[in-house]
Image 1 (cartoon, helix red, strand yellow):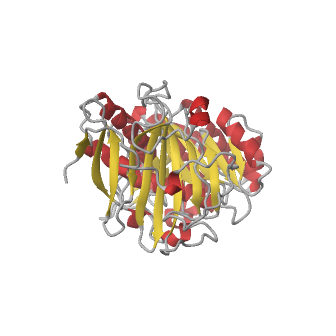
Image 2 (cartoon, rainbow, N blue to C red; image 1 turned 135 degrees about the horizontal axis):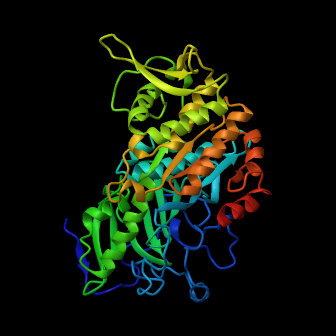
Image 3 (tube, rainbow, N blue to C red; image 1 turned 180 degrees about the vertical axis):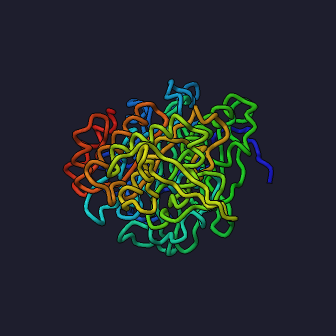
Length: 477
């Protein structure tokens, strides 16, 4: 169905009215405390707290009422402000991650610094934070809900009760900072009885630029509306309910009016920032064997580390040299350099070695300890970019205009104090340059060391008394 411009302008309770799961909390409602509803709760995560106020919303608007009007694009802040309300970072980055209702988290707003480390006891939700960020990245790349959430019920908040129709779900979102200013994305997903998107909202300066809402549960589509301007204030069209609408906006919006161009700028900024994500979990046992020759792009498990080192040895001399220097500080014995040797057999398998210096035999990586292998893989990720990693970055911008975000669960697993310190140094170096950002889960030992390092933000998810202070620190940095 073709998109239908709405020439009549915004009308009461029409278009993508804000679903219950996206409505701002009532006056007097305490943030983080679920409001009491009189009737059955909607599809997404019943009982979860409403999202925090949108960035850029004026205090006067809050006093006058909800800043989103009736939820129609163009409502709220003045249309003159738009998405480009302020100059943001040259490279789009996710400045905040929100788990409004996801796994064990309710109302969690996590500011993201260039280096953000999550700590806390088992069960505090560190892996859920990383999973939410990775899920947004996959959705921004065009993946379907089924591919991103193979077990959606596991993401439904603990003890969340179903509504009268048996529906339960979860809500996640983020705020992306960039040239278009802060742009907020909120997403509500129904997990049961059927996996589908039930609401999405793209907001800039308190103004909804794009929104979707589930109108007819019998149809596998949501009603989308986006700001148009000119003769048609709002354009409406059906969107699929299994894909992120923001990622489809560049394919559906022509950019013929100033309003459409603001929607495109906001959507493309979010897509670029979210797609520039690489989740890494090195598995030493798979890194020991010689690697078959390939394109030299590091996989998530880093099993092809030897093949990637072969490529960086010849194509990325400067970064390869930095990696060799890092190995000197973190590997046992003398390290003169890193090399990769191809076997003489038909397979052409590649074996990586540590060069021990003139007159000394080289050491194959397969003979190194698990901590040394994990260190080399993680250091390589922090020192390289999307071109060396098995990921599909956004093609809208040159790689030099994008900031890669590395996600690592168990970042310090198997590492000693010296290796942790060197990895943290590399992460802070890369984060300070703006090329690579890090969001990782670590143990208490690594967290304690990071608290002493200027520039690193440590968030303890297991102790509420620490969270506000740590989050303020992350925001300031």
